[in-house]
Length: 51
Image (tube, rainbow, N blue to C red; front, side, top):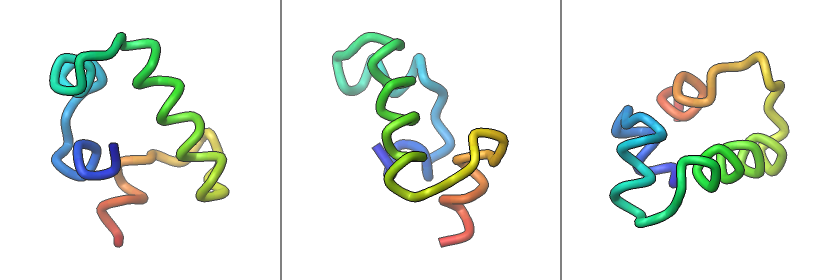
């Protein structure tokens, strides 16, 4: 998931590559934010690009 986000892909593109629904991608993004301790207002893509 992080790799796809670092590639700057949209949720729709990630869903088609992983053969999951767009809702599942959104859930994965939410869980990733929770694990990393990131605010919902922080852009996840920008956060991952810094590392």
